[in-house]
Length: 173
Image 1 (cartoon, rainbow, N blue to C red):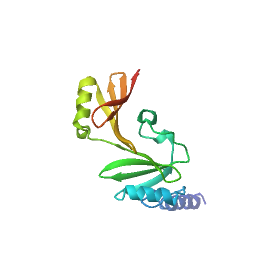
Image 2: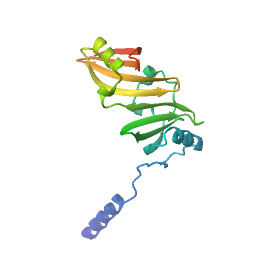
Image 3: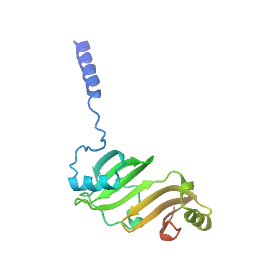
Image 4: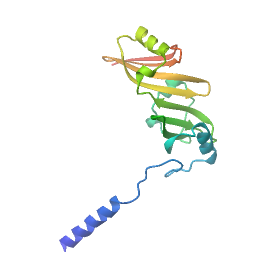
């Protein structure tokens, strides 16, 4: 009897593991209802987006420092599309009316930063190492959020494409 119960349990475990994957793909959502206006605004802006997934805004999952970037307050009623384009992972934010709030993506090749930004880093943060760079796009500007580290000292700098510092945060621990 114990063997039969064990075999049934093992069979159920195998069947459960063969169930559908809930990975969200382009044009679909799981667990949330994305308004048509939001989807239309997104598809118009990013027609070449791939592997699109939608979620409600969650402050703990934002790749950028919203305060440093100067973005308006987002709330749990806003939407975020995570997608890939040109080999980079993007995050696009929309309000429930379909209005675009902003987009950010991680830059993995720091050498691809505009020359004025590299010059500013070399001049002002010569002793620091870049730990992360995000390109932050909003209606009125494109900026780069750069995180730097030198031992226990950390800096977050928001700069424009010309290497001008918009905002700066220093953290010592």
